[in-house]
Length: 224
Image 1: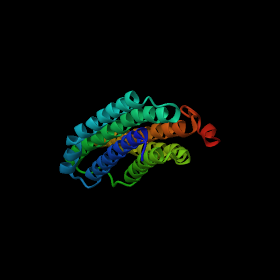
Image 2: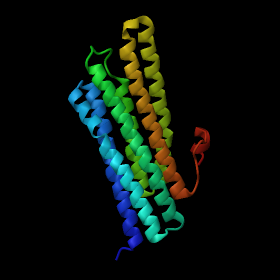
Image 3: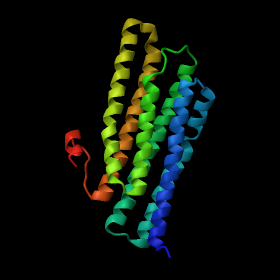
Image 4: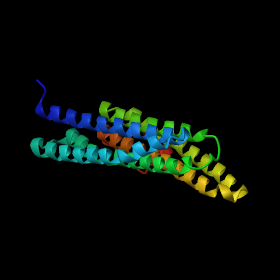
């Protein structure tokens, strides 16, 4: 028979996985709304933000109840604490998805500035990081979590590339500035999503290895 503590811990994990799946879908739809110029889809993403907010609150309540009921120790306690930190990161990812959707509504009302090439790849990479970070959390896989952390450099590099490209557009033709700025906001949101995934992955490393790798330089983390 499953121990009551294990049962409640697994329920907490399941709730986080559910929340993560919803967040991943919101990000996917927001990017589709932008690339496919579908403002109705963008509005759907914007309207769903309250659902993710409720999920975050539910995770907090479940975590508090678990601590009060079972008084977990050591790794179980670290897991519960990690869950209360992972949920806000997921909620922020959802907020960024909403931000992307809002920019999609703006951009869909005007002629496209340029074909989307790097941006969808950046979105796919950042979204994949979120997915793998949650997978690492559920499976207690610190090595997968470390690989997620290492992938953040690729997202940062794409952000820098997009920034340079859009800056060139704005310098050569001032009339492109509003559209370019909107795309810069989207790219910045995707870069921040990579950061949120990194935060989650760092929580996994601490949970599994009891090692805090926050603020380490990439070379230091790679040796971990």
